[in-house]
Image (cartoon, rainbow, N blue to C red; front, top):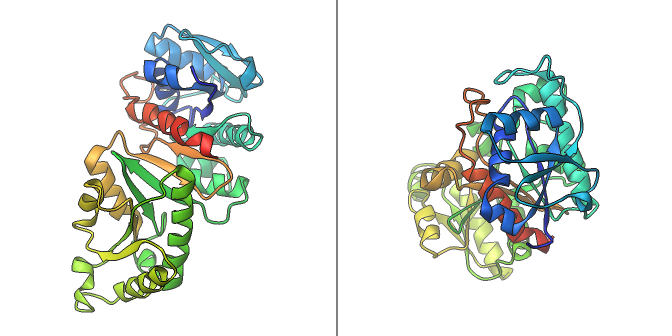
Length: 329
């Protein structure tokens, strides 16, 4: 087994995070690839072990090096921040929002201190974060703030197809307004650097079109003119980039290997393409930071939390990608 510590915060305790962590710990592929350091609450984790009838003992540790990384052991850094007497599955809760944030903070500290090679995150609930008065809307913003990264990059990887996003959690109207030459150029610069850090040094990046048929040169909108202008200048700088390429075909072409990545111009454009291809194996990677974060790309699933039926495929894939890319950071 490789000396490759991966920190895994359990996410919102009221969601499925604890269950997918326990299931992933038991997966032979994860056991062979990584030494998983779970960050969470002992009561919550032991409850998940009980729900799943998992043959695991929970070992509380203070540092990754104190763990016993064997098939029957879950190594936990216990923050002890959940009152199990008041805890409820599937409920928005300030207690759980605060706890989930604290698990992430601890995991980031471990990565920044080089005690783990990456962080693989589980789902959190935005309403619970808000109830706890946490000043961040989600994972990406938390990682950006705590690592002092102004604008972290989000990349999805699924079946060797990689997708970046020019904008994330903004309205579609605002996202269209953000399709500007300077922003596109900045993203291509930074996305290319992130790809190099991940070990992807060859190939061409494609920029997706925004409008039907990429606007047909102004017939269906003129936002693509910003893309054309950016691509022309980027190519002069020596970047291997093309676009706009119609969004109805660019993702298929990337999957076939024509492009090493796609820059999606708004949130759902890339999300729909990747998740339709393989929902469970679409993994989010946050880059442009001094540390690596991979993540499942599903929510807390409050409706099935505590039942043990949740699939851990996405969690397993997130940990394996953290193992794959973590040593490069």
